[in-house]
Length: 386
Length: 236
Ligand SMILES: Nc1ncnc2c1ncn2[C@@H]1O[C@H](COP(=O)(O)OP(=O)(O)OP(=O)(O)O)[C@@H](O)[C@H]1O
Ligand SMILES: [Mg+2]
Image (cartoon, rainbow over all chains, first blue to last red; front, side, top):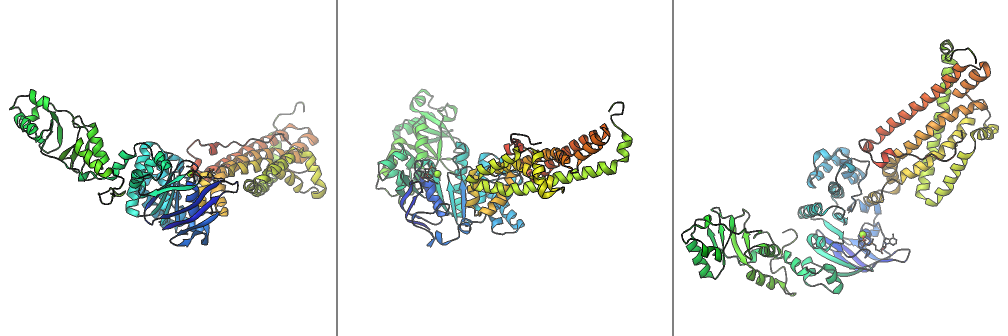
């Protein structure tokens, strides 16, 4: 655990970058510092590895004051990743990754073996080992930066806006990669960003900073979206926090109905009967292997011959589906909004239809998690590694 | 010079060892030593100026003022202390190289981007280790660009040293060519050898850079084509 106790930093020019920060950063989890520019995120981060020393207060790692350690030795036990990667232009990729092992006096063979292992872990190709940093794309350089930070297997990883210099598609894949790595490695990660989406996606907890170096709120991201501590936090999070928060709730608790799901070999008469019996204006037609074919609405059924088979009729496209076991309420809501029938199709891992959910049922599910008093733990919240 | 041939091959063949060969060797020695001493002085001066910024303006002014002193004057200034030893040539020529080498070392040391420097510190590099393992290697293309200019300038300036009675190809031109015979062949041999030597040294430095900086090899990055601006004024 990393602890900040009444930590302040005033620069010689009088700027107060951090003001009396109290914070506990749990071991093995990802804590994200987020906030507008200049609010002291980088300064707080750098006080952990002593790139900056506080003017007041104590920072300790597992109970030991960081100022009791030699800065260079302390830093070799803390990985550090920055926005422009900061790779050495004159060293090959493999030597860049092996930097800290070399500093620690490992043999060349051992350091290189470790570097190759890490290249694979972060998704770099073996033939890139002998290249120089400028021969790699920005996203690949960032992967090297992450590999280099992990090389000596430090328990703590500091990341300062590591993904903000790459395009949105690469950023999303780097974020996924980090989640995957973290699920495997369980490092104590402190991650700085000014992008609240990124904070909510990556953080086990999110610390929102306000200008002047004050901490506005520290919370689980779902709680942050549900109950912003004040107007500043609410304004910073953005207007659609209600919808974004739905990504923390699993779709598997939704009441899915399969009674309006019919096969291609069923007749129009049977479909009309279904519509009448359930008071539902739509039926979903599935192929023989239960993958979705499309929607049939009441008007189309009325126009068709009663003994025609459903497989012979033209259907409306079913649009997006959501995966019942993995996806969130947000995906289900999205699928239903995009569906011509206003109903979302839930599928299993094989893509076979499990059932459909109408917007009204989705609405009550959303309503039931929507209260500010709700506890995601009791309602099957989606963890960052879930 | 009248009816004599431009190139007297017989003269070249009979004088190949001495004075042609000995002048060339002397020329190599008189230009190599100033470049070596210049580099040895420029590195610490450059490192100090890069680390401690207020030092740079006075250092730069100092080396430029030295560069502005006419070489003949400087040779005669050191003559009373060094008499007719090689140091009379080596000391002034060394001082001249500083005007080219010091700014190049300082510029080269400034090539490491700030984020790379911070990453190095964050990984546990101390200041000395960072200088030796990061700043200096990255500065190599700039330092070599400076060495290329300094060596060509020095090789050409060594000839002037013969005016104060020091050896080298200038001596060949002066004594064998003008004074003794008003004879063209030694003059041409002196020019050709001096130019050839300058080309050879330049080529060797290019090869040295390719060998030392493999990371600049296959691309057109700024550092690779780092051109060193020559200081104003020509002391030769
Ligand atoms: N070395 C320094 N000397 C003086 N002031 C500084 C120094 N470093 C940072 N500051 C100031 O301290 C405040 C906090 O800076 P910091 O870099 O921690 O902000 P940040 O939250 O990381 O911002 P950003 O999102 O723009 O990176 C700013 O007002 C900044 O100008
Ligand atoms: Mg910052």
